[in-house]
Length: 579
Image 1 (tube, rainbow, N blue to C red):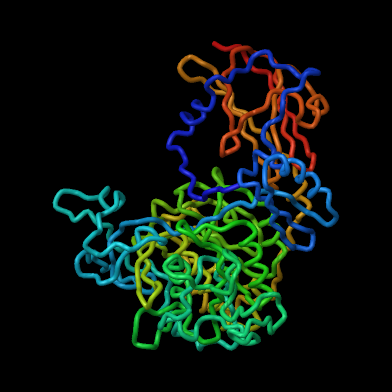
Image 2 (cartoon, rainbow, N blue to C red):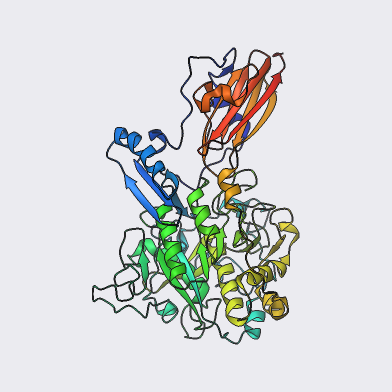
């Protein structure tokens, strides 16, 4: 199954639901002996359009099984599920990077490190291009066209540009004044596209597997990967973590974290220390920068097994992925995750892994240089922890070049770098301490109230100043995997009228992501009447798990949902007659 993270969400949810409702009515459908086929299940062939199945074992191992046709898939799925030691059988979902396609203008270099409020657009003068798409050729400065959000506030006689606000930065100068380079080695795993480890500004800042002899065709360290000197490419299954221009996205993130600040060329990375290295773990690739559940899980496991403490995930999907959840929950690393670029409230339209409420995860939104969230950035009062600069970020790109990119993908490495800096500076701090320090030291902004859990933006200077006193020795709160994997679906019902007609919207949510099917019937019934989902009228749910039905006949109706574990939910409602 292939799923794009950048789902286009309707401006008017009502209209999209009504379109779905055409031809669907709540009439006299009832549960009987002649069952109606249940809705699409993740255990049915229709849920696997590529016939590609991910098997997650209890010990964390993954296996991808590809069937030749629908018949063999249908026969093989239950066999896989019954194998000893199997925890999950699910589609091998696709994740895409959270860089944003943009034609935005060029700004003075690295406003995120120091913002004096004097930034001006340099459409013709700035020598660095802007990536309209991180997986295509960048635009030259003279090709820029101002985006709508820069024109919306323009008044007569004004330039129509967004004015930078002094102090909207991460406090790099204050942090550097307090940072002595640290004493603890910290590896930040960049699970992303590949990284150009030959870039002059990244020399000496990329993790190297010193137990591996380059080019001898032997797995010298016995970790199962031959010649993984600079990491591993889980996208194509090789040791080539840099494959060319498709790796601009990962190279850009690496520069934000650790590019040299003292070599008289290019940009300055946030962490000015050889104690911090970036591990290139390629899990995304191709023309769109996508990757599968399997590639991401294996990349995470490789990173931790090879000493990474912090894992940067500038990627996402609209699909709740139980296998990825369990992998992150089982890890001791700190995960820094992009909120996504749908401009959506994650409380209503979750994105994963950003929406996983795990103690070892920080979710990051994209802050603009005027102190407001970028209009494209997703947000959430409880789902998103903080914001960080992510608009017009200048960083390293392949071939010793530099370019601007915009998106929560650019904001996330800012926080990963801050975490690495704290971790290296305070060797007695646990990763849970580091997370607490970062979130408790944010710079509060009125513009972020209600949009992030902290109501603030990353303030590395304040974090460094408070770090020594804030060490508590806290450890990660253990996640309740049983609750996540065994929780039943949630049914929500809402009645409304439109143009003289009465409609019922049914919303199905499943916290553990193993939803199977939903159905309904006229009358009052128990779960047993639905025969495990084999009886009743199926509910054809849209991408958000919702269906809207035209109500023609009033009276009691029973709605039913079941997940792969067999957990059932039943809800009966007495509907009024249509007006």
